[in-house]
Length: 399
Image 1 (cartoon, one colour):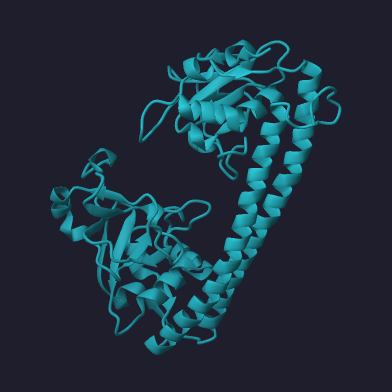
Image 2 (image 1 turned 90 degrees about the vertical axis):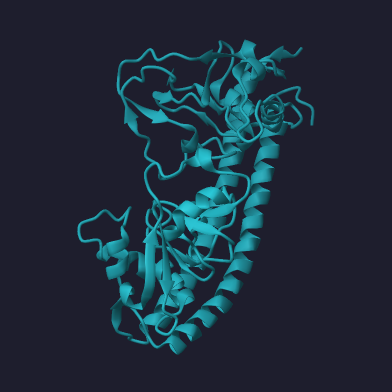
């Protein structure tokens, strides 16, 4: 006999604790894994005045914004949860681990997506999610299923982590080879400003906000577009042409050097790439746009060097007391880099491009393996919680 999800769990919507707790928001949860984002320290907050829920160990969080991302978490500590997360507290005879696996399963996520409102930012609600019909096995079987999934998902996660470490290793070999090739030339250190003809940052403050973005028009280069010596066109933002004409000092031309002014644990400030032909385009705040004197330096060479571990260290060393998370135009101008003859720079770029093509081919293979492991993990969870898989120690479950 099937019952509605609301019979198995209650929605918690109030803050009953007066203590300081970690605050969990949607961005703190990984997609599809049921885990917190690694290396992300949760901020500590006092009791929010409104719009949050007190979460206790054993409660299950479910991301209601863009539910196709399948962001869930079984709380292992007392926290506060943002309004973009549903806090589900298992009722009696419902195991929290089993419930966490259930809401991560494909049928529940698909139901949440199908019942969402909105196009650009779809959002589900507890009223709709609560109507999903489920089969609840006895509590002992729930625990056995959760034990089985704990073991199997841990095994799969360990394989995925090994694949990711392999990706990091092959990418680090590329950057190490690049830096070694540059240092072998023993070129003099030169401040970047000496090879630039133009340098600007993006408009700050209230010049424009995300509400000014449009479906088309002039491209806006944001931090998310700046990879390690590569431009990332995904989720390219645009502003209307009429607004673009107000920001000509921040204009980006094809072949310009784009530099990140802000970093995070995975992306150091100062990483750079060469601007593709974006048509009319500007840089946003915390992004810098430089024009290189090609008689003295190769733009591709500078992008590679700034994106390398050497570049990360050089930018940090020139911070003069600034944090390594954020840099400004003066830091970029004064950052010393080894600048051999342009012909040597071009030779290094050509060799690096060949090496990078081989590296990317291997990364594609490893990434595909990770994707397949993730799909297998999700299918395993779905089969176990829906009774389609014979789980050890659970009698009467069909094979």
